[in-house]
Length: 421
Ligand code: AMP
Image (tube, rainbow, N blue to C red; front, side, top):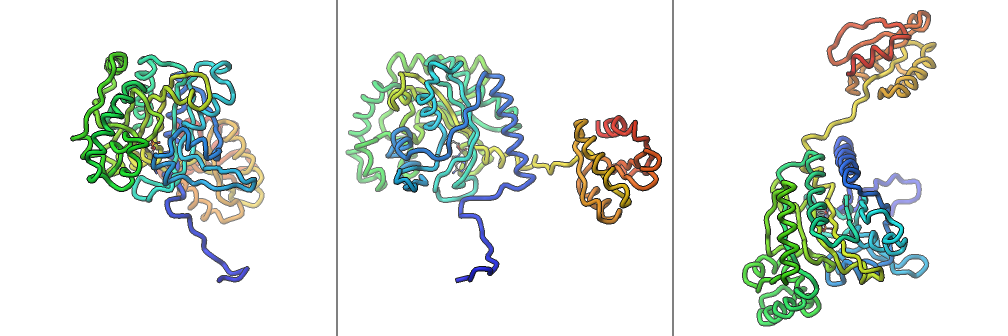
């Protein structure tokens, strides 16, 4: 046991990580692209708590799902409440929608969130225990226009973030009526073939037979052999119309009847976006309709559709584009008497919208110049005794390794803007 005062190196927990520059800049870029696209489509931000009552996720995500059954960080808090760190965003959004009466007071039922989610999954490339999701929820619109709009928005977001090579896969799980009939047919099939199922599926088919289709072990074989879901005329019409509208939006997609999605609340249209560049964890985004969830959570009957995209996986796809942020200008004090003026100059540059940095005015000129070169700045601005006396600044364009020039202080901002433009 180390005694108090011993230095102990503490590491991150397994499956958790530090996001360092330049990779962290990809997250910023992706999130900025998402905000731009959300604003084009009339979505407003909802910030929901990281910790909620455990019951929220058990009731909405579903107690037979892997997320809730095996992966949730749940604990009893100091007040004896059973709470959980959110594994996904939709339950919190639905709770907030009901609790704040947003169906009455909200503008259009369109919300987005950006936040960290937590699942105690087995970590591997592209799978972490803490990861960031950007999610969109459109509550209160049952029409296929909402389905087509939200999927189109998702594709536009990926384009705007610079992510290419993704494919949209689509299916329909039908309404409660379609699934009631199908549930019986599927359950019958699974009972007859129970010997071939994995242990967890054997234990849950009676409660949730559809989960077997989504099971990582049993799913692939069942997708080929198990009976298929038949949609009622209204659901078939909704699904066909959604696809037609996606064509009008020029969103390429494929229908895959074995796409089920692992959460309990999905109904009707479900979809995923995948990228073959990602290896085994190839899902970039998952989503679908959850027409019955708001009502089942105690709210007004409100059909809804949403999705969540994994920012960590988008960042993996964009990793070649990660760039260290560089300031435009780097300010150097070449003498003791110039330090205060150099500090003032930093403020003037930033006030003019020019990003500016410095190292340590108390170090030698040579050391400050080295930092300027390392910073990637376009221009170094050097203030010494002569410059202060003459109200000038020495300007050195770093990338071109050009000679230093002397510029009057009154013209400096214009000159810097010219160089960096
Ligand atoms: P889901 O909420 O499971 O539908 O996931 C939506 C998206 O979040 C997925 O397509 C992934 O991009 C991302 N995602 C889910 N789980 C993880 C994880 N453990 N690590 C990183 N990204 C994840």
